[in-house]
Image 1 (cartoon, rainbow, N blue to C red):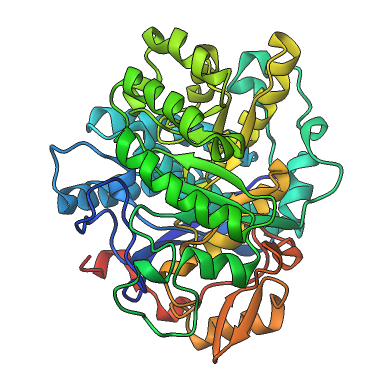
Image 2 (image 1 turned 180 degrees about the horizontal axis):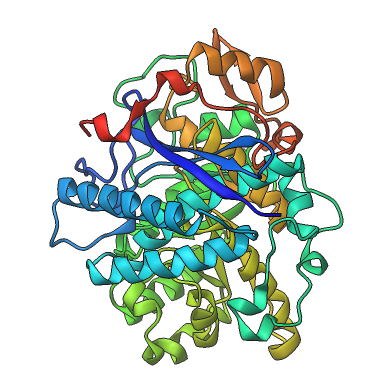
Length: 477
């Protein structure tokens, strides 16, 4: 079927002030890593018979995308917006006529990546800009065919050709790597930021909005079992913090599972090796319950072949996963060759890329005998569009637990309009619950159920309240 992109509009959803602060690393002073906003895309697609709307969205987390210190936060945001606008132009040009959403993504991603390199952007920023429009196209193509994303991936609707990106996947039928049925329940992996209060003793003053405020309270209220703990890059401070967290978790949670996230905190691989050894010897219980360690080293050091011997040694004790280092299509393949076991899935890094990375896990096992995996991450996913689309992707990737609690740094769905909340009430009472006149993620026994986001389209039928959004060109930042 021939398609044509008619228009692409960029909007901003303003977010209310954070309910509680979030910090990464040992510096607890406030850091501007992203504005209180979500970018929203509205794309109009014609199939020759009718015009349908595709949408996507993401927080512009410039401080995560680009951690170089040579630019100020304001410069990083300005640069990211310019890159996103360039990506829109590329999609409009390349998408004037196309038949395959996958081929369009491939062609546009190459051009966006080339432009980003020429203008001194990080590869991760290029992936972000590309993925914004990739998802809107996927949504629109699924809506044009009145099919779900799960159906579209497995039935040639999106035209996925794995061998176009990875030669070793040339003969792969993408349907063969999909789960037999769409996963509709996910365990929530609760992020514990470096400054998050663990018990009442850590609270200087209560927020008092009726929602949990400490790790212990969240475990009790939501029945949490999975936890993602931020580490700072200082082995002594990290061990001390982890010991306190483990005391709370092992007392409160049933069969707890932990993942650690370095966010590139360790700049010396020997120091990271020392940290892993100290954790294993000093915190044996926590170490045994740790599933993997995510992005411990800087993205440059991650892909340094000189680290291979140490990475392989550490990986025999605990699997290592890349995240910020997964900024280009071959990143997972490169990291696996060095000794890493997994990569994170985030919609903001690319949906097709994650599907191909899942395919690579099957091929790696066949060719090397080594197991590998994808993890579900992204604290920044907020309702409606980013959260719903990410759950839809997780169902295709068959990931059972995911980092999914950016909402606890806000007050439920207070960022949504009354029009959007009425849509939640009408269509998504499996995923949300109403309490104190506000909607919240409906976490029961540590899990959410989200079948309602799997209808025709990508991430279900619910649209943003377009009239409430600010055009990006008019946004002051």
